[in-house]
Length: 538
Image (cartoon, rainbow, N blue to C red; front, side, top):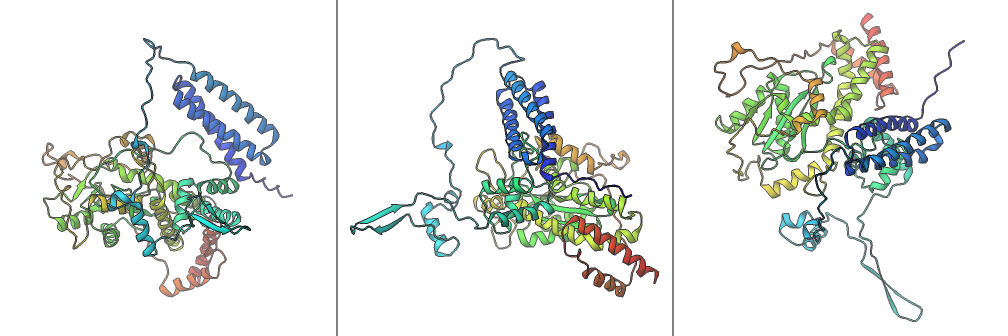
């Protein structure tokens, strides 16, 4: 008699369970480290209340006994947090100082973005945008009707809400399911960015409601993503950071990317089956055609960066300091980006390939198997990478000194506000030509202490030990004394061109060939591996 199939746990219930246990750990930590810190304890308290609301909202999927335990535990959390707010480990040496609240001035008002940049009034910008068809006319300010007595009645419309996409809840849920299927770790800001790059403008409340319907409550209820720390360069294209990410190196796949330091705009990203300098240069030159030549580029001591460094030195001259060599741990701008890439789609593919190894016959030590996964899935990884980059560039980033803005917004308006750089026929801005300390330029020293970024760096990067025999003068720093080389051998194709055509024709008839669902891709691998075995034996 066959064993009964295991009962599937609903996604909403699993999300609530994970959120409950993670929140319990954070509250326990807060009770030991934040006694008397009212603001931080209130943040934890708000997270507990949000989880309680989610438990009530999704009570239909929670077993009654489990729900009772959760609600009882949450009541204990709230009591403990309330008590900790009134306690203190630090007894004050004197009475508190009473300070009256200063009157709010204009500095507390959010200013519009375009008028200061263009140097004209908001109404002028609006009129010109309407003339060129860049925006749609708004609803009329008032509507006039004639009543039964012949009197003209004017009804004013007070709403100023901008146009939003008119899609039903079912259509939005279908889009939400599509996004979370491809990028299961996306938060609501990244989901909103993905919807915008698809051409949909959806209010935050509807995104939140759809997310809850499809996914259930979010896992995190009190800890925010790693905050973006201040970073200062002159403007867009002042400094570009680039690196290769080795999270898929086991399967001979390296992800290379370039990011603008000023705006965090991802100018290029691509997964490759090798780590050659010519491959990195090819991606860089494609970025240059679209987004201009950066004044400087920062990279680590890898041999894959030599061609980009040589191109920059030839373009600007040897005295400009066009390429800044440094340790990968100091290239924080892109190291932080790799955390988001791993969360966005990198870890999904790593788990997928490991699953193929454990259950579906993939052997990464066989050249033919590596060739097959590249043939099947490298275009799919790059499709995910491009979708992720477009979403990243559209998602809103929380800034300390101004309103939330997207990387694309900061890249575009930053050029208007801080000058164009890197385009032919445009006078260069020279205020970033003289850099006193090139070694420290573009290093975010605050983020060096970020445990999430550093843990991710240590997991996927190994800085080689310095060979002291290679150093001519240990008291100078005129470039790298030695380069590190990470060899990624491109697999050889085991078939001739005619056999590859047979394989492609067979796969094109498969129901799984065009799906982006990972279970369908697993089935595609099994089907392709079986066909290749038969083809090789013929």
